[in-house]
Each structure stands twice: as C-alpha cells, then as structure tokens.
Image (cartoon, rainbow, N blue to C red; front, side, top):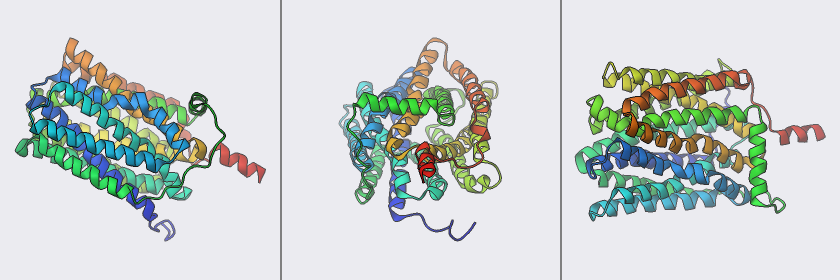
Length: 418
C-alpha cells in the first residue's frame, strides 16, 4: 500500500467514528440488558422478549425515510445531536424506572421504542455524512474503520452488559450505556459538517418518491435492499428468541449469552480487518457474496443445536453472523456512497436503513408469532429457509460481477459535459 493511501483520515471523520463506537456500545449494552431485565426482573418469556425486539426496531421501519429527507434538506450534524440526546435521555429514564421500582413491561416497551428513534437518527446520518468528510478514494478505508469500531462495540457491549447484569443488576448496565451516549454527544458537538446545497422547493412526497424510484431502478442498489431485508428478517427471527432459547435449551447463563453475542463482535472485527487486504485479492462484487454465504452457514449451525445442544455451535454460528455480513456492509456501503448523487444521499441511505433495520421488527414479530404458536425451535428452523433466500437473491443479481468502484449518474453526466 502506498504512503498516500496510508495517510490519516481527516480529524472530523475520526471524531464521528469514535462517536459511532460509543453509540454502538451503548446500543449493544441496552440490547442485552433490556431482555435480561425483562426476564429476571419482570419474569418475561420468549413471546415478551420478541415483542421487546419489535419495539426496539419498529422506528427503523416507520421513520427512516423521513429522517433521510430531513438530512437532505438540513444537516447530518443536527440530526446526530438530537438523536444522541434522545438516546441518552431514554437510557437514563430506564435507570430511574428500575431504581424506583416503577419498571413494567409496558414502560420497557415505550422507552425501547423511543430510544430506538435516537439510534435510527445516528444510523442514517453517519453514512450520509461520510462522503462530506473523506475523499472518494478513501471511502473504503472510512467505512472499514466505522465497521471496525462497530465491531469492537459488538464485542465489548454484550460481554460487559451480561457481566454487569449478573453481578450488579440491570440498572448498572443502563448507567454505563447512558455515560457512553453522553460522551458520544460531546464528540458530535465538535464536528463541522457542511449543509447540503440548497435545492428547489418541492413536496416531501415527491422527493421521497424520487429517492425510491432511483433505488428500485438501480441494478446495484436494488439487490442490496432485497438481500439486506431478507437477511435481517432471518437474523431477528433468531435474535427474538435467542436469549430464552440459550438459557433454557443450551444451558447457558446471562454471562455466556453475552459472550455469545460478543463472539459475534469478534467475527465483525476480523471481517473489518480483513476487508482491505481481501479487496486486493478479490473484486468488490465478490466480497458482497461472502456475507450471505456466512449467514446461511451460521443459521444451519444454529439449527444443529436442536440435536446437539452445545454452546460451541452457537458461538461458531454467531462468529459467522459477524464475519461475513461486516464484509457485506463495508463493500455495499462503499458502493452505495459511490453511485448515489450527493443531493440524494440522505434518502438513499434511509432506504437502505429501512431494508436493514426496518425488516427487524418484521423478523421479531414473526418470531413472536411462531414462538407463541409453535415454539422457539421453529423460529430457528424457519430462519434457515430465510437465509437461503437471501443468498439466492444476491447470487442472481449483478452485484457479484462488479469489478471496480462505479461513479454516480450525476458524476458521469458531469464528465460527459466536461
């Protein structure tokens, strides 16, 4: 790698990257602490924990596109500050509810839903801001660092949350998460992100429609949406019941449940560290296939725990769920940022967030229904079929054939004019 390619990323990007690490850490702490609190404090079962997953993911389905439009019309920084402040407030509220013995399952659903709105804002704004903070030839590096930071959070957050809940109670896990969110907010306050160029006034519905038509007509963006959506339905079919399934069927403890989710983060770290050297050996398109393949294999290994009830298979499964999809995320985010015109980056990012996160309440809701009617084992079995479908979609698309970083329609038109 040349010295030019090894030059440090801009300081503005470094601050947003560290704020992303803290945000993801707080989110992972809460995602582990909330179902454990529901089970250990409120006596919840598989159906209730699945409903909690629905509440924590539903804003991504309902509000992602409006957030994208807000970013295109204003500034990612404003959305980031408001989102992080909301997230910190809901985490602090959960601490107060537990300490005052006023926590109920209904209030846990409400604070989970509201807090997820803050997580959503950051999830849309950060990838929208990256092209403004780094040069085009550094997009892969920047996205790699963001995924590496997210991976570290996925390792440390669940493990620390599981240990804290086991030894100090759920309220202390939420205290640590609140501190992390507050630190992220302080970092974001120092970031200078330019406002987008003013556009002619148009109706919100027309602008949303333009973004939707652009994505659905694009031969690279369209399969990204479909694959991400199907993958996350399957992933949250598993996530919706995994805590209860692991405790009851695999003999795991809250600490080892956190460790299993931490192994997911280890896979993400290795995937993020592998992305750059791997991109020198295979094309960007082929890198996008690795995630769907690992997802399918991981689901198959988890199904095997029905007959071989060992935590080892669960650990390997979660490792694959982390390793492959992080390569998918780095490759597809870089492709998305490269082919999307700057004036539409917020809306396009929000549509990809809908496909990624908006599918999660669908998967969690399906998990709640299947668990209630048929039992937890059927959630795992159906997930294998879902993961097979997402692998089929990406293999049938143009994505595996992409050999180099393409340009957006806007840049291509500008080059022709020049």
